[in-house]
Amino acid sequence: MLREHFLRLLMAQGNAERQFKSGQIADKLYRLPAYVNAKTVLFYASVQGEVETFAMIQEAMRSTKKVALPSVQRNQKTMVPILTDSLANLKKGPYGILEPNINGDNVLDLSAIDAVIVPGLAFDANNHRLGRGAGYYDRFLPTLSERTTTIGLAFDFQIVDRLPTEPHDMALSCVISA
Image 1: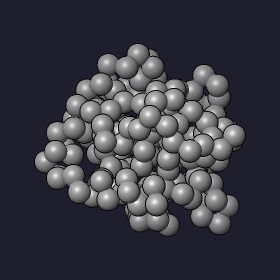
Image 2 (image 1 turned 90 degrees about the vertical axis):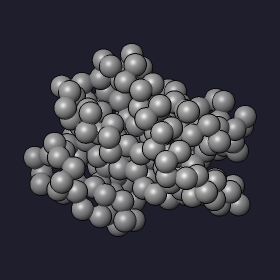
Image 3 (image 1 turned 120 degrees about the vertical axis):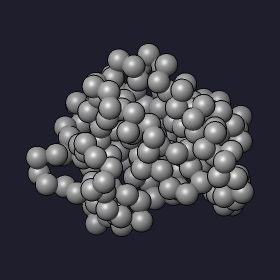
């Protein structure tokens, strides 16, 4: 019920407003010290309705940052961070989300990740997130180093006072919204 509510809100937002707010969120991200100092960033490839990340990914690629995107391993119910230097060679993964090809040389060691940009349907005042329900980020985030900064991106209407959480739910380091 809660997921459907936020999915409806995301899809109801006009494209022009989404692009404008995504730009505002990107500007805030670029000023965030944890992002500025990050050498390697794991982004997510945005899907319809979400905060648009492709311009952020391109900006990070133009800078000195190494950029990775997740590759979903559906049979293992895991995601693997894959280094990528181009958006041109992405393919649709098991859920229709763009991801890079794995070639063995581009699998990123988790200890190399300085910051993770995390998607969500909703976030609360304590930086907890409501995902889409498959649990990939819930399983992935606890495997990261404690020094890794986790950053949620959201539109203002995705921020609520409190989300229902389980004891295993990890709060993000911060959430950026506009």
